Length: 23
Image 1: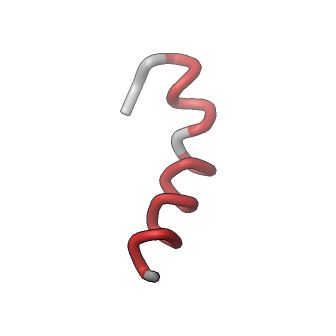
Image 2: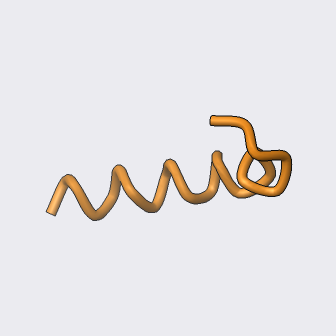
């Protein structure tokens, strides 16, 4: 599923952003 891969990429990239509350 492409959606699953996209989510994983966003998670890896948004991992540090999530901690800062930035998107």
